[in-house]
Image (tube, rainbow, N blue to C red; front, side, top):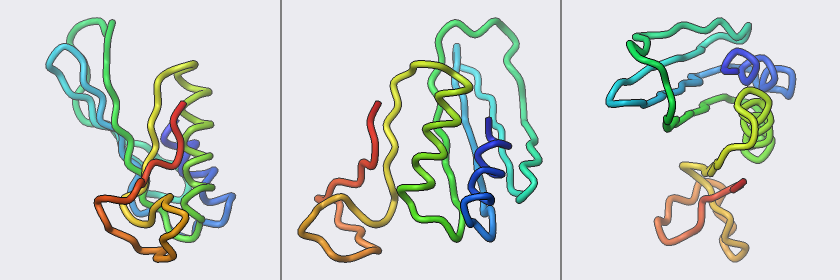
Length: 118
């Protein structure tokens, strides 16, 4: 999934993959997976010692050269293909969805940064 996110972002115009990282938590354990290359090479740290029945996952995508909404679409599409119908909220650390705000680097905590919920 992370490798596909990286290569899809590159295909969409990203000229650099800063970091694509997933942290998965289950039963008090943590699995950390990341990709930092344009070819989607993925590495992992740790693994689960018991079967996973319930989990939460946070994915961070830092790429340069693609618009944040396009990056969000790529992220959602790849997660959906890999994990099926799951609850997902995608937000941006900078910029916002407030139609009155014209600041592309908005960091106002009062502004909505959610790009997509499914």
